[in-house]
Image (cartoon, protein in one colour):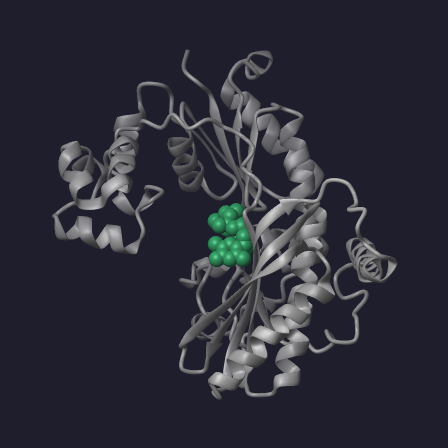
Amino acid sequence: MARCIFHIDLDAFFVSAEEVLNPELKGKPVIVGGDPKCRGVVASASYEARTYGIRAGMPLAKARCLCPQAIFIRSHFPLYKDNSDKFIKILGAFSPHIEPLGLDEAYLDVTGYEEPYGSPEKLALAIKQRINKELNITASVGIATCKVIAKIASDLSKPDGLLEIVPGEEQSFLNPLPIAILPGVGKKTEQALNDMGITTIRELARLPLDTIKGQFGATGAVLYSYARGIDDRKVEMPGESKSISQELTFVRDTLDRKFIEANLHSLCQEVCQDLCRQNKRAKCIAIKLRYADFKTVTRQVTLKEASDVTRVVFTTTQQLLIKALTQQKKPVRLIGIRISSLVCKGKQLPMFDSGTKKPEHLDKAIDKIRSKYGSSAIQTGNGSSSKGNQGKF
Ligand code: TTP
Ligand code: MG
C-alpha cells in the first residue's frame, strides 16, 4: 500500500512568532537576526522582505542595503522554542508517526489516519487550521508517497500552501524542476552537474546509476533514487544528538582575554544546560577560535570522567583558550565550544563527595531558573558580557 507522508513547515517561522507578539509587523518587510550594524546574518525574513531579494543566511548589512526600510529584530529563542513545542504537540494529535526536523518542520506519516477526514487533503487542511488557530502562524504542507517529494511539495507551496502529489505523478512532478531543489544537491554538486550539462531533474533521471555513482559516490546513488521519486526512508524520531555546540561571533575582533573568557563561560552554561536536559555527560570538550583573518583553529581534550558541570567544562575550555591565545596573538573574531562523546547519566554516581556535588547543584538551580524565566534571568560571575551573534559550532 502506498504511504501517505506529510511534510509540514511553518512559514517565516521566527518572523511569524514575532508578529504574533507585535501584530503591527504584519505585512511589512521584517528580518529576524539582529542589529544590521552588527555582523550577524538573516535568520528569517518575512515574505515581504523576500521580495527585495533578502534570504536566510545573508549578512544583515547586505539585507539593509537591499531594503533600508526593513524592520530588524533580535532573535528570541525561548519564544520560538515554546511555539515549536506547541507545533509538535499539535501534529502528534493527528498521527503518532512524527519526525521533527529543526524547530518548525516535521514529517508526519498519516497512512490510515486520513480516512476519518475523507482524504489526505482534508486532513492537511485540518492540521493547517489547528496550527493557525492555536499559534496564529500559517503552515505549508506537502503530501506525497515519500519524504523527499513531500518536502519539495511543501517548499514549492509556500507560503500558507498545500500541495499534494498523488501516487503515480511523482516523476512528472519532478521532471521540470531544477536540480538544486533536490535535498543533497548543494552548490558544489549543482555546479558539477551543470558542468555535465544537467540542469533539470528530468536530465538527472536519465543518467545511468554507474555514471552518477562514479561522479558522486554514495550521494550519487541517493540522487539517482530521488530523481526518480524513490525514497524509502521511514518517518521516525531522529537519533539523539552525538554532540552539542554553540558559537558566538563578536561584534568587534578582540584580543581581550577576559572578555573572550566571559563569553566562553556563557557558551559553557548553554551547552551544559542542554546536556542536563538530555540527562547526559560529556567526555570530549573542544573549542574553536576564528581569528580576524578567518583562520580557524580547534583544540580538544578528553576528560578522565564525563561531566555536565559548567565549572568543569569552563575550566577545561579556559585552559584550551589560554594555550591557543598564547600560541597565536591575533584578534579573535569568533569563539565556539563543542562537547561530544556523550554518555547517559543514569543514576547519581555514589562516588561524589559533597564538594564535587556543589557545582552540579548550582548548575541545576540555574538551569531551572533559566528554563522558567529565560536565559538572561540569571548569570554567574564569569558570564556577564556576551556581545555578538550566537549560532552553532
Ligand atoms: P526555515 O523553515 O528554513 O525558514 P522560515 O520558516 O523562516 O521560512 P519558510 O517560510 O521558507 O519556511 O527555517 C525555520 C527557522 O529556522 C527560521 O525562521 C529561522 C531559523 N533559521 C536560521 O536561524 N538560520 C537559517 O539559515 C535558516 C534557514 C533558518
Ligand atoms: Mg519554515
